[in-house]
Image 1 (cartoon, rainbow, N blue to C red):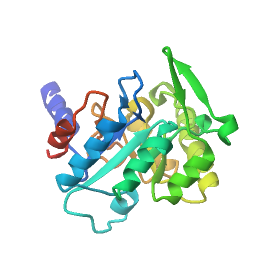
Image 2: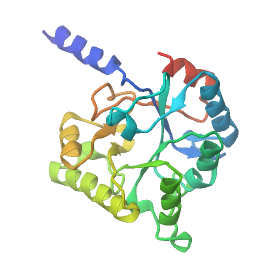
Image 3: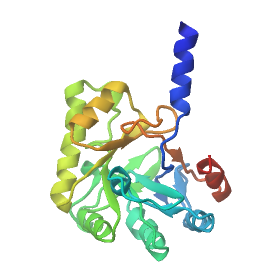
Length: 239
């Protein structure tokens, strides 16, 4: 019976959502392994376009709207300043869209109050609300990455619900539009977390390669890192 249970788990983990989803973080020349250089990011976008992939939003997918023949969802976690200064211009120049998952406690009121964090010897600069509003107005989808980017499996149920719901309400208050999708901090999802996110008012949630699958509240995403090549991206999503 244990082997049967393991086979079921492995099968579930190997499933992929109907639309491939890519995860990015910073688009910069930082030393962080999660930082993709602007040149490599633009090469990735161009490779996707040449291969016939077209970007779509979670909203259109969840609403059942007609999608292009080869849809793909681009996502960005953590709300870094370069999402506005670098990723947004590259996307707009190609008529592409993306979903940006924000941590409201890291979003400052304006440029004078920008949040700058020091972590592991590196500096991280985050978006401010006017930049987020401009991204939303430009057609980018905005989602939540938790109020404080906490590791949710370590929290009690009531705190998980608070992290998910408070962040949604805060982003909606700033943008005056619905926030429909949640990204688990650290890509750490569990069964009880899926229920909490659904109850907090989201229509879907994304995870990563370990826990993610085809479940709408635990969607698999393929990470794009500093050394990920455009060809590797194409091979992965072509699956």
